[in-house]
Structures are given as structure tokens and as C-alpha cells.
Image (cartoon, rainbow, N blue to C red; front, side):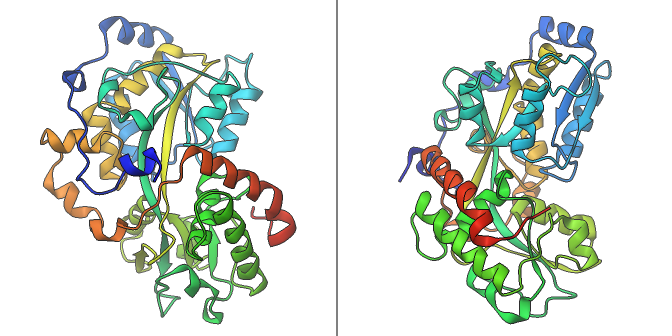
Length: 367
């Protein structure tokens, strides 16, 4: 079991050492410098994702002097990295200050010199296995991949990956991104492979590619990028989605149409996302202040309201900072007992396999 998998169990049994730093505030100097910059450019933060709408609103209310410029809410992790590369000398509105990407993209962005180090005031309460020791990237939240199902259209709700291959799900199953660059979709391929009994990493990726080739050949795979809207319209009645996206989408639809969210019986894969500041950020102080907001108790609870497990979850729980009503809204812990957290090495190996085999083996160009 990798250190990441061991530490980031989705149960609350894990104990993280508490630190007085968890209650620190950003310095007056940082706040003033950020206000002078007057702007923060984010990318790939849809308001329905992980409660980001409320998190962004809270930052605006706290610092009204700082305008938030939101780029391409539906971008994937690879798009975020490319946005930094494409705007290295650009100080205008197309250059992101901050990114929120899949775990595997943090170390690679550091290696390419695309991000800069910064340690937030609550640094000591972030698990060591979920952060770069030099502060270049740090975990923010995690969840597991689930099936979001439109039960107006789907009579028999699938309970596992093998069910999705059944003829009754023709033209019904979709991913939320392209496995050639979207972190959520990359992990979905691995999850399908894990469900076959393959080990995490390259083996799961190979098995997952074969699974999706069969799903596509059967006519069950819909080759479009799925969202809550496409599910509601009936274009993609079954969406492989992060549990937090599926649950918030269910709330958003409010029964029209009715939705069921299922954590599969096998192939339960968990994903950690990470935050980082662009090495070429036009507004570096605003970016640092944004990080302070995200890793404050308020910011972490904002993510929890959006059904994400914030990275400081156990620290908050230990200190009695989590309202019971938020805990009651989360899926039961038993649904996550089989969750696998692929290590960085396993993710890198899987990503390489998928990038080389997807197009030729699956033959589905997801747009």
C-alpha cells in the first residue's frame, strides 16, 4: 500500500497532528499587496464543482478590492498546464495565476518550472504525503468516481462497471472528459481496469483501455464530454463523475429529472486534486491570498459543502470544526471502504499507457 493510499483513507480514523498554525491569518502585508494588484485570474473552476461557487463568492466578499477573472470553467488539467505555457510572457487576462489540477500534474508542472512555491499559514495541517515538501503544490480535496444516473431514462440502475456493458445501456454511458488529457477521465479508465482485478498503475490502465474498447464496440459509450446538463437532457443518461460533482448535480436538478448516485461495487478509485501558483502569475500576491482563503477553515468547509473531502478534513474534525449537518449529507463511509488511491508513480505509468493506447484501441474521440 502506498503512503498516499495509507494516509488518505476516506474514513475519519486517520489522525493528523493539530497545529496552532491552523488558526493563523494571512499577514497584513500580503493582504495589502494583493489589494494593490487588484485582480486574480483562475481557470477551470466551474461553480458547481466542489462548492467553488460559494468559495469564490466568499473570497469576493472578504476582499472586494480584488476582481476575479474566471477563465474556461470546463477546462481539464492538461488545458490548465497549457494555459500557463502559452502565456509565459502575458500579463493580461489570459494568463492564469492559479491552477487546480489532478495530483499527477503537480510534480510534472514543478519539473517543468511552471509553478512557484508558497506555504500557506495552515501548512502543518496538510498531510505530508499530500504536498510537495518545498511548497510547489499541495492537495486540496479528494473524492471517488461514481455513476450519476438519470432514472427517468434508466430503469435498472447499474451497480458496477461490468453492468455498463449490458445491452440495455446502449447509447447511455459517458465520461466527463477526454482520457487523453482530462484527469477525471484518465482515472475513470483506471477505475474500470481495477474492477477487472488488475493492479493499480499500468496494468489497470491497460485493462481499462480494453474495457472501454468493449464499451465503445457495444454501442454503449457516448463520445461526448458529459455534464449534468447533458444527463438531464437525456443525451448522456449515465455519467462517470466524481461523487461530489454527481451529488451537487443531483441537488441542482432537484428531482427534474430524478437522479441516483452510485459508488460502484468494485473499481472504486479516489483522486486527489492539488493547488499551485503559476511561476508566471501576473498577480502573485493575490494568488497567495487566494491560497490562504482556500486552506483556511472557511475555505475547507466551503469545499465540504460541495461534497468534497477537504485535505484538512481530519484536522477540522479533530478540532470540532465540522458541523454535523455537513457530515450527514456525505455518503456513508462504507461506500468508500474499497477506495484505492493510486500513487504518483502508478498514475504516471497509467497515464502513459492510456495516452499511447486509447486512440488506436478504443477508437472513440471524446469531444
